Amino acid sequence: MQTPGIAAAAPLSPSLFLRSLPSVAPLSLPSLSPRRPAASVLLPFRVRYRVTCQAVLSADVSSSSEIEEEEEEERAAAKIGKRVRVTVPLKVCHVQKAPDLDLDGLEGVIKQYVGIWKGKRISANLPFKVEFQIEFEGQTRPVKFISHLKEDEFQYMD
Image (cartoon, rainbow, N blue to C red):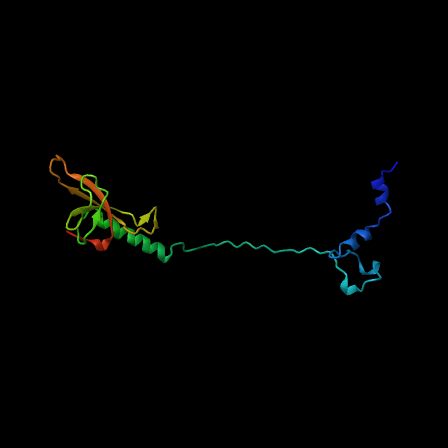
């Protein structure tokens, strides 16, 4: 026994479904469809894409920028440990014992160059870490603090 949905669908042909969708054309061979000219028949086909892989047998991986970074790192390593004097008026507020401290004329030691990190150049605005020591009244030991400076803000003492 057929249900009403199956009974109603039985007399429908596949061509009715294709006619209800105007954008879908039937896929048929030209000899089976006398109503259409051969030029307007859509044939199924596959599109094949060619993927090529190329391997590099030899390569020079050192570029000019890497060489420049290595040279810059070597020059900065030579500057670490040198004594410097601050030549510009520069106030820092991070020293608790002396708020609004002016660094102009103070002498310190370059501790680190932070312009290159893990072998890569970074955009450090103040790339030199300079350690200063200041004697204060009532303190038995000098107060040590570090400040970041540019190269044009200090001069080398040695």
